[in-house]
Length: 207
Image 1: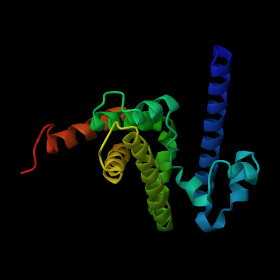
Image 2: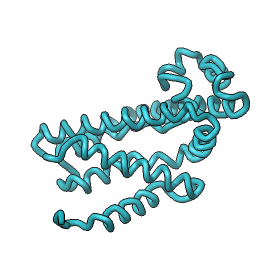
Image 3: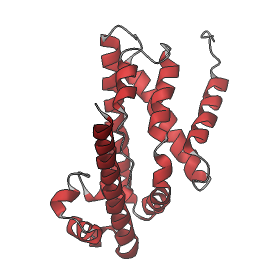
């Protein structure tokens, strides 16, 4: 791919992220003002200046947009390298690379994450959507691990590996929110990993 194609692809991705962010902000602002039941997909789309059809290019439901949970699109190079058994060849270290790729984009959702936490407390019905989101991401990561195993690069159970990755991401989200999203999310991830490796030191055999 030449430089112009890379530039064009990058521009499209930035526009998509900006439109998604606008939809999330519109959804959260409206629901904070009116309440969840009083806001429709059409209201959100109109507030963001797009059609309802465009809304569904980004979200499957109103609740998903209101929560504003960040997407888990990983750079194709990161995915390809992981599936092939890289970049280090050590399963845990490679999972951390994937986790880092995911949390690196969290900073862009700082204000949205704050509103999301406030809404989750205000609208308890959103909890089921949060759980469904985590389950869907866990399934996505398990599929990546299955591909890695199929390539002969790993033998760890996909459910266990994807569960560990989600544990890292959940703890980053909780810790980041607890400190009002002030630090770089990757620094928060480093802290979570340090705690985990302190609990289970590398090379430790089961008792």
